[in-house]
Image (cartoon, rainbow, N blue to C red; front, side, top):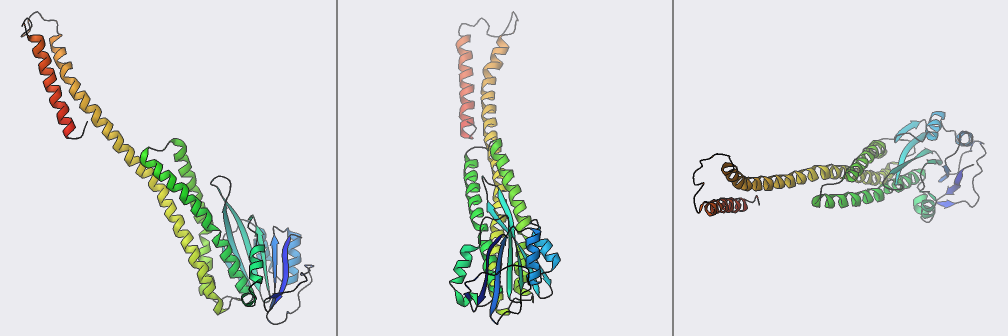
Length: 324
């Protein structure tokens, strides 16, 4: 069986002997005691043993085995069923998603993890070192694992913010190449999916804070409020990152239009300057026998003087207005 850990806790102290998940129904536990079962990618047969042992609802078990669920909170009798989604940055800038489902009931918490490489062993060890907190029951453990999952969103958002900042600074100097533009749109697509997959976590945490749910003590709601605050901050950073990526393309386009406008003005200014000698040369290049000053002794020098004077005046004028 894919059991990461299966222990019973009494007053915050772990029993040395692991729980045997054999499918036999668990008898009533002593006061201030609960079981914490951690499963990683179990199959249907393994989940059936756990279902029989703790009396889990078949529909909730079916959802726990489906790793494509969206975050949600459901109540089955005295059992609270919570689905949370994990997210971590994979190779490159792709976001990988996983799922962790929780069954919280009187005297037990069962977690079923799919697709996430962040195991809960370190978290469990840390909680076992705080017996006074662990003694509060499975609702505190649920808070701790949810907080652990939400904190995993921050590293990937920080990394994507660094990437966006690099692209934003580069776009100020030169218009992004096609590869960079494709990268920006891939990131925006990743963030849209992040919002669609992780977004419902905000509703899940809000319900754990305000709703009257089984196995969640009123005193534990303040802990879930902290997780809700972390989720909202992560979602706010994600939306800000989406706006930054959209602004990169928009800003780069405006800067490129400005650069093209400057080039157009320069070309227009030089075209106007060169039009003067072109026009004069065109006039005196016509094949007529009689043209004014055609046989004038100083006509050549006069024409050059006129050309230089007009072109110089135009050049000074365009320099003054910033076209050259």
